[in-house]
Amino acid sequence: MFVSDSLSVNEKGHLTIGGVDTVYLAEKYGTPLYVMDEASIRGALRDYKKSIDENYENGGMVAFASKACAFKAIYEIVKEEGCGADVVSGGELYTAIQAGFPPERLYFHGNFKTEDELAMALDYGVGRIIVDNGEELEALSAMAKARNVTANIYLRITPGVDAHTHSFIMTGQNDSKFGFTLETGEALQAAKKAAAMPNIALKGMHCHIGSQIFDEAPFAHTAELMIGFLAQVRDETGLTLTELNMGGGFGSRYVESDVVLPYGEYMRRIAGAMKEVAAKLSFPLPYIVIEPGRSIVGNAGITLYTVGSVKHIPGIRTFVIVDGGMTDNPRYALYQSKYTAVVANKANLPADQVVTIAGRCCESGDLIQEHTKLQPCQRGDIVAVMTTGAYNYSMSSNYNRIPRPAIVMIKDGTDRVVVKAETYADVMRNDL
Ligand code: LLP
Image (cartoon, rainbow, N blue to C red; front, side, top):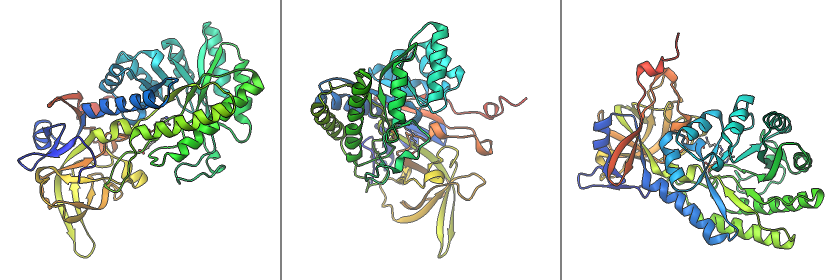
């Protein structure tokens, strides 16, 4: 019934997270409320690190893709675990720096970095800037020259692998706004150009084939293509690049039918593919970087809501209407994402009702999940939606001027607020 190891049921029949009663949390902090289990976040980071240690003797870095969930305490946890972080905007970069994150372990992404953001990256001294297009390369070179510094970069490569269909369609994914296309030769041209540019140090290549991917085969295939590309760059420019960033995208469990591979399995396949092609092409194995986001924080988080009403429409459906919705979790509205929910104060009862969980926004599409199983419930009950640690808080909004919920972190059986709930004053703080 639970799709995350952090969750259980206590003797009162209440859902617990990290051993803490969620009904108690709802009473103490109010709802909606994001709750995250710190042990689960640290455990996932450690599992990924171990998977590199065990499968890839040439070393590597786990860089948490912070777009999945960005706030100060997360960067502190990731820093303490000795990992890196992928930041994709000035806002993420700023938060990481404010959290004391070592800039040399930051990977700065984005298909449109403004001049201000590039300046921030150079001035903070971020470890690697992942250049997405030719114009950015020119701008960065000029800015680095003006500062008399060297920008350490990767190029983002679009490898032409369609991972979303779990099959290899070699041309499909070329239709992407991101990166330099491998197949058209654009990527090689960019590599040649970057290798010769002043104040630019081309350190390696980057790719990212998608998100919520369960199959390890597209990753292995991409690894082969990327090592092949590194060998081609060596042959054509004489430059042997020593780093390869394979991006993120490893899937998380949202519903019972999701079959998630142990993280080590992805690395085993990726490392195996890299070693095989590298040996064939006599290319020295690069340092590897991976950027998991969802799979670090997704299953660590739940969202607690209070039920406001239950609307039965005979012969049609039953709506369970809760005090949050697309403002704290836009993923069903955007992607029809699957979720598992439970009535937290009746978690020991059978989930024998089929309901649609709807939010409170003035919008019919404001749904959390349709036709999902839930325990019988009524106004005042607490509904917990699982696997909301990734791309929920980070994608939240103030639509309808609804303040964002707080985030409570659970550690060693204790709870602490790591992000305060917004107030009405917060919501209108920029209004003049
Ligand atoms: N690296 C790069 C360059 C990325 O663009 C992404 C995600 C990641 C790493 C991390 O991917 P992950 O391990 O989290 O799958 N909002 C969508 C997901 C968008 C992912 C964007 N890029 C959602 O809610 O499903």
